[in-house]
Length: 132
Image 1: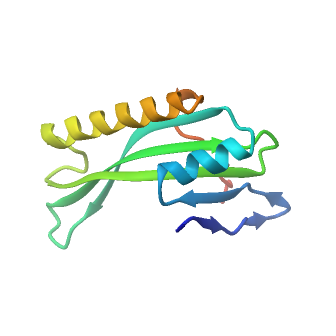
Image 2: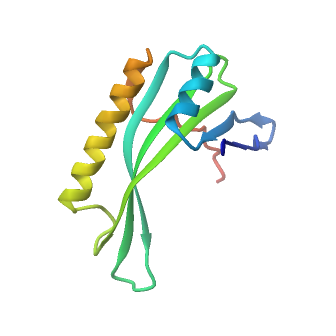
Image 3: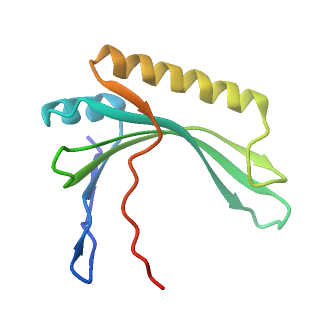
């Protein structure tokens, strides 16, 4: 199992939830279910990175599944990279990649609902520090 636990960052007495990342949806489901969590969040996100050429971007499409334990101490996360496309803008316009992402989202939602989870859209986000 390639799950990874991120350290819990602290700053000025503020404690952030630990984050556990999973290599497969099955491991995510097993651990989240074991913790008694019933609600998960599922959504599609883009990750754009500029290439060596200033006019080309690598845009990744990620299906992200997150959940937080009832005490708010731990965030569980599974990310499935659906596709990476090259674009001239920092967002995906490839209809094939978008269709593939929609299909994967539907598959994940079906899997999560079949496992008994209440599936919501969006992602459980970590609190952000105001660094200004």
